[in-house]
Image (cartoon, rainbow, N blue to C red):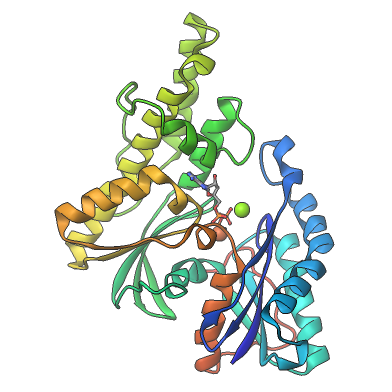
Length: 332
Ligand code: ATP
Ligand code: MG
Ligand code: FE
């Protein structure tokens, strides 16, 4: 099947064309408008999606060398995400499906992050574990089949991407700060500063404690030296990053031991983090895991992963009615 997929759950407007399971392209328009606010402003995101969506979809179609009339279905992110942002994609997809008289396919954004692993040549076998780490989620997913997944551990408060972004914000770095912390961390000493862990039951996570701990740590150090952050940005970034990565890997090791599963994948925006990638490879070698890490362009929000999920839904005949509505919260 030939499917056009649209992603608009947060601050990336993206479109992708997939033919018979092969992602042909992945056009992404990132919204710069949020940078000066230190976080995504929902109303501005919604407006930017409206401004970008036609051009992004046109480009995906054009680069695929196909026409609208070649499409067998239109897919879109139904949720989870920002309601106003999702609405733009859902409405656009509906309009197109109605005009072309082809079926609609709704996709769960978090399922799609996991299914990004089936875009490339190196694919995990079922069942596998996927640590999905993004701006809004931190979960360990037991993946039984393409469309059969179970969350076996998750954050009880903030997402790890949020912890990266908020820590960056208190250091005075622009949004999104995760990639900047990653960049500075590469020149820093990860053992320069120590942070303490909050204990959580089972396979769950908590990242709100480290956020406050980090805030007070900087406040106290700045009282002693007003230029503390500027002078030590690399060491601070490296130490914080290592702490967050250790929290993630501790749980992932437990999940692998509990389930006996050793095909281990990571997904979501934070899976772009070089510290996480390197530590995961090191742990994987020690534990005899097969490690799966998506290409950078399929880590953060993108329509390629939505297209991949839509492909499997098409094969199963899972289509949506034209009165489908977006869901801000949507279980996997
Ligand atoms: P969700 O998928 O949960 O709805 P989202 O769509 O905002 O949330 P993504 O686009 O998948 O999430 O990921 C964005 C997050 O990834 C941001 O918090 C960003 O800081 C973080 N991120 C991206 N690259 C890196 C990196 N190299 N190191 C650390 N964090 C990163
Ligand atoms: Mg984003
Ligand atoms: Fe996402």
